[in-house]
Every structure is written in C-alpha cells, then in structure tokens.
Length: 484
Image (cartoon, rainbow, N blue to C red; front, side):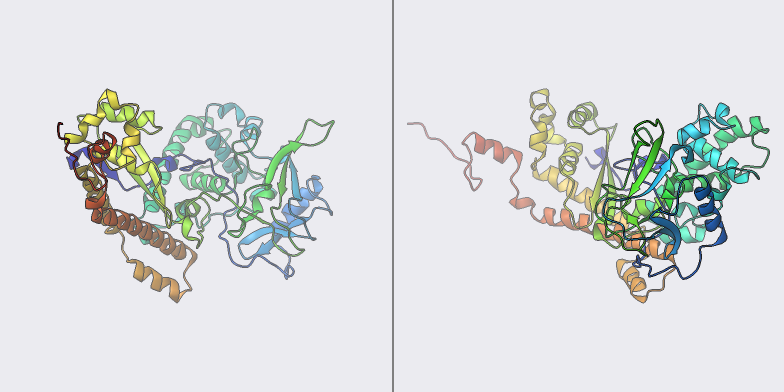
C-alpha cells in the first residue's frame, strides 16, 4: 500500500520561474544583507565617485533637489538611503518620474524594442540592462555604474560554496534557477542576440545574463498598479530591516499632479527616522530564509523565517487515482500539493486531510464512493482508521529521516559554528539555512512520532459513525439492544 503514496522532499518548482515565489509575487528590492547597525551619526567619508556622479545626474535631471530628504550613503550594508533631516512616519522620501523607470515599456521604446516584443518581460529588461551596461555612451551609465557585479545570492556562489548547502532545498532551488536562466539565455541568444548583431555588436555571455537576472531578482519592485516589474533608480537603494513588521505605506504609483498625465513612483518610510539614520523598509514578511538567500543574499535570525516544503503527490499508479484527484480538486488542491511547514508553527490545515486521502485504500476505500463525495473532506479532517493513520506517520517519519541524512553536518555542529562567530557572510547564510531546515524536519518528525504513539487513543471513522447511530458508548464499547 505504501507504493501508492509519494512524498517528495524538495522545493517547489515555482522557484524555477523568475520573479515568483511559493506564495505571493515578491517584493524585490535591494540585495544587501541586513546588519544590526541602522543608525549613522554622520557620513564620515564622502560617497565614492560613482555615487556622487549618480546623484549629480539625478540632480541635473530634476529627480532630486536640495530639499530631497534622503541621499545615497555608505552604510553597513554597502549603499543605502540616509535621512538628511528628521522624517515622519509615512512621509514620502522619494518621488521618481516614469521616464526614469526601467521596465518593459522602457525596453519597447528603446532601440531594441522591435526585437523584444515576443520575449518574457524579465528577459527583455535583462537584455536592456546588459546592452546599456556594455554600451560606451549609455544614457543610463550613471545608474549602471553603481550596480554591484554580484551579491551574496546563492545564484552567484561557487561550487565550493554550494557544497555548504548540500542536502538543503535551497541547493535544489538554486541549481534549478541557474538551469532555467541558462535555458532562457540560450534561447534569446539564438533568437535575438546573434541574428541582430547590429544591435548587439559586443559579446553577450551567460554571466552577463545571470548578472542581469540577479539585479532584477534583488532590486526590481513589483505588485505595483499597472507595473509587474520595474527598476527604480535611487529608490532601489532602500535596504531591509527585520524590525519593521509592516509592508504598508512603503511605496505607490501616483499621478504627478492635477494637470499632468505623468506618473511618479513614491517611496515612503514606514517608521519615523532621525537625521543621519538609514531609511529602511520590510521587503516581504512571508519569505523564508531560503527565499531571502536566493533573492537578496541574506537571512534573518527569526525562527519563523525557517521553513521546509513538503511536496505530496497522488500517484498515477494508484487504482483510485481518478477519485482521489477529483476530491483533491474539489477542495482546492491537485495531483501535487505543496505544504510549507514553518518552525514553531502547526501543520498547514489541509496537510493531514490530503495525507489521509493519498494513503486511503483497502477497507477504507469505500469513502471514495460517490455517495460520500460531498462529505469526505470532513471525514478526512479526522482520523479515518488506525491503518491509514499509521501509514502516514511512518511515511512522513521515513521521509524526514531520509532528508536529514542528506546534510553534511548536524544541528549541534552548526550551532557550534555560530557560537564561534566570524563566519564569512555566505557561510553564515549556509549555516543558517541548513540549521533551520533541519530543525523544521525534526519538528515534523516529532509531530508524527508523537501521533504514532497516540494511535490507540485516537477515535476513527467507524467509532464516530457508530456513536452517531447510538450503537457505541463514550468509551468505545459496542451497545447491544435486547428485544422486549
């Protein structure tokens, strides 16, 4: 019977598509890791020349002025936005007009617009960034010169560094993303770059494409009215703070004025900021540490950033495949279901019913009959039978044991590394992610181990049914009726 049950302990394939996550479209911004230092008494040194040139370009173009409440500055994360005066909560700190946005519309209006019409939006913007970066006389030169060549995102890690996340879902996700980016590059190289050498008179490499992908993944804003993917120069210097627990009031698109058809990207501070402090926002409360590491190249210490995705599947070889699939789809699920288990939190509500459905068979298969179709999910929310419950407990524990055996270190060894400190940022990410995943796996294993110990105390479908009919007592004893 166990052959009818498939559990795949791997990351969701949703990661294989850019600018998406397991839950919501991501809010993608800066790429630098958060540090505890967010307050700067003063800028002890002037920003490097490229940053000064960038600011002068924005000033000359009328994007900023002497009254702009923030300026680029050297901060613990690298570059950030530093308050030039006290700024109140929800106050706008930047307003960037649409002509300075880099998005699919900007690509369409550029010299390469005619050859990018059929491309995925992110691919067209990536090509635009690469071409402008490689051009000698790009109008975007001042902006491009302040962009990093790489970040601590795992897509940029060497093979030796990736060994540190062996066994993790993050490794599978990272390799999948890189494979996806490579396939998209080969396709666009064949269809656009090589056939139009007059537009791309310089070599464009896979490394260039991966760079552009990383820039978009880490810096582009999304979930904006009418804009699903847009780079906003200067605004994308905004850094993340784990202490900010709201995503509200951070940004919006609005009209430039009553008599103007132009649009502005408005960035606000969600908290009050003192002069000399860095302006920060919350990137995404729902992202796991693995997602933060992939998108931005940092992680957080909060336990609820640690998660593990269990992928459950109704096997096509299951003799009841059609019935089970119909039941799953009727309850908002499908042949394959992804469940994110978060450290310190209970199992997702639909996970146990789905597990029981997948494992359903033998004497319990009568519940799959059409007469139960409207009520079966309610039955699956409670234990069906001892055999069914025991099977799911055993399969989940075996899956957890198998997954834990794939890591190169134990939790104790990782905790010791953390205590010793002075870890390279990428090793710190690796240790944090793999420790978090292992803790979640141990949590899942513990939940089902405890449940297995309680099998004899659980109430199953037949007992509940007999009670409903008045044929079973509160202690589970069968009630016999004698004729008068």
